[in-house]
Image (cartoon, rainbow, N blue to C red):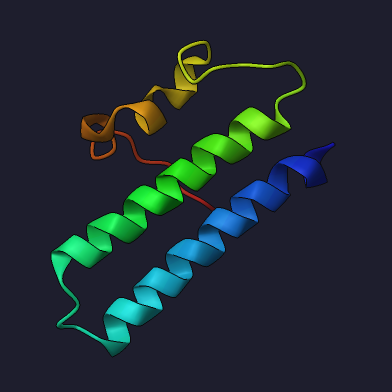
Length: 82
């Protein structure tokens, strides 16, 4: 069961790593492009959570998903991945 939860997390972390690598290799990358990619990753994460839930859910039904549905909350919540 734990492995099922880790696959979506690994996919999101891989996407973020790719974005970080691109920013490192291309520092003049526009903030608009970075924002677009981050929004895409956020949408992908939201969809993965909804798809992997044991029962159909919406992001409004799960308290810890409010950060995914509210962009302004993204800067206020920090999760350390180990």
